[in-house]
Image (cartoon, rainbow, N blue to C red; front, side):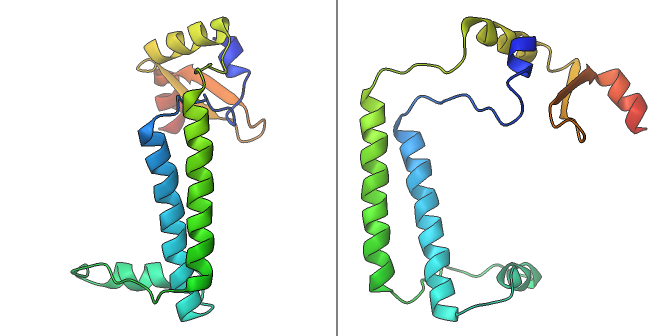
Length: 142
């Protein structure tokens, strides 16, 4: 377990590349493009102004309004989508190799088995994992 915890909170297990991973990546690009086109159309705004206006509306809008097309942005976004898709497809054809060693994999399975008894947090001073029993965590927080 210590081998996995020593990796630190910023470590991420590399996922196997499949269609769902590609879809999530391209969905993120499309969300970015949508926000960018609205920002270009409306000009500079106060940060989070749109979210506060939308959250104050009592009923959600009936549909999704599309921003005016911006040809200079759309061509670049299309090129970005193609490049990302090409990279993911080339990675998907390679054989999957996990970026954890065998001891780290065993430690991870042990930690997942103990998740109902242990509490995992990130230390505010050391920025590494802090592991404690859930009973101790309840005593500290109450």
